[in-house]
Image (cartoon, rainbow, N blue to C red):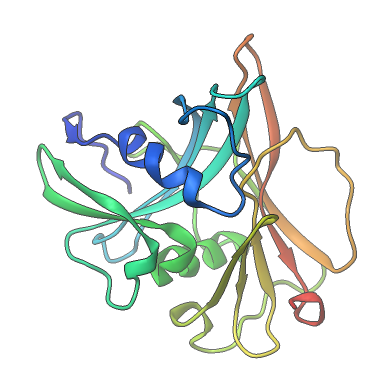
Length: 223
């Protein structure tokens, strides 16, 4: 299970995200640089114990009203081959040393564990506590379950756009739509939706709301 080290990061995750977020196509541009705070998220375990996997929600107070962004990230002890465009930055971890932090949908380890979560083979973990499952995170798939082409998680087709990040799992396979700008869940479904991963985050005035961090679509609606 996830081990959370109580130590330092230099620079911090929020310091790395501050210049990175405005460069993304789904970022709602503000007049000033982002003013970020962490308000939610969860983790998944890498079965090999090598890659950290976190689904973080940050609140940006730079605009006229708060905005909430979902940033899945992976933490690695060495660069991920072929993923230079997905690198958020590097940081020095007080226990583990240098870590390379990537935008998670581009990392095959995160994609594989996200599939495992939707298939009921992975258990979401608390964001800031070791060895602690997070039952508030829910994963649902309708129908006969989620079938993924062999090897699809290792070479997903990833596309970033203003509506979020689409991860297509193999030729003609299902697609994962990673929500980037979070809004409280209305419960409305769109055509082709097969399932979703839902979780909450904290509001500035107190309380919590939920939304779909990831939506699963049928293969015929993946494009």
